[in-house]
Amino acid sequence: MRSQLFGLARDKLTTILFHRFFFAEEPDVRSLDRLKRQCEWLRRHFTALSLDAATDALQTGRLPNRPLLITIDDAKVELLRVADIFAEFELPIAIFACVGWCAKESPDQDSLLARLVNELEWYRGPVRTIKTRKGSITVGAGALETAKAVDLILADRDGSELEAVLAGIADSFSHPRISCSWSELAGLKASGVAIGGHSVSHVNLAAASQLRLEFEISETRRLLESKVGRSDSFAYPYGMSNTFSASTTSQLSKQGFRYAFLTHSDFASHRTNPLQIPRIAMPDRPMSKAEFQIRVAGAGVIYRKLKQSKFSLGRQ
Image (cartoon, one colour):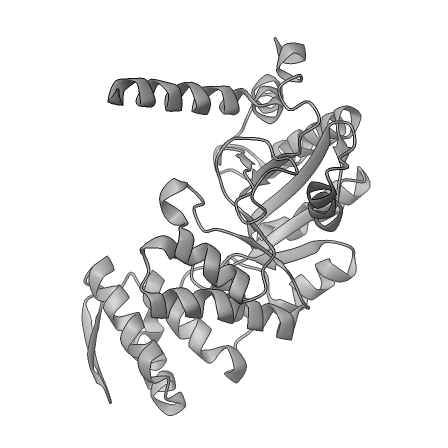
């Protein structure tokens, strides 16, 4: 069965996506051992490419046998414990960082607006009303009010007022550290890891206002270049079919992103839209050896296409 699945990708690029490597239901040593076995299997059965090599090969159409790109979204701090494992097995990785999350770990004036937008988006405290020069904003009252609050802040961007609003929701900052800092990302890049963008606040870009969309993409580009270095690759938050659109694609191109990655199971070739490159996501839970291998080989690609065919037939 697995040998037959290997024929699915043929000469196309397989891009896999990790979010997490450690799980509450098992000791960390078991998670690390599993990852090592997964890396050993990937090295034996695929030609692992760096982000630059993979995107260049997609453009030229000159892909090696069984090409593989390994991506990791969110830049969570736990990846610092596994980066050496990928390096040990000579498997290049690409990390897509949510810049608002990283800015929270490295607060400075340059990232003030990104930090505030991120905190507004992820505020989970009691309902509060905060007065600003342009009017009042309400936090903790649901997604619609949050979106309105962020848009009001983005429409003004007064520095002194940003500090006051951030201070007004400061007691929501008491959760544990989650993301890498800028210096940690820079260190990873210096070791050969590719760093791309994943928005400011992990919002659904297709559902955002035009003002928010422009900010999320342009500020991602600006902060990455300022803190880590230039990048022309982006991974959509969530990445499913309802999270990208003609507007998001246009804005990515406008801000200088040449490649964008989604989260749906498929393979990529030189015919693939470079701003809609598919990825095969690994679940955020422990996997058996067989499940991992079948997923990477493309079992989810078959399932997705069968589901699409069934949906199309049902509409006829």
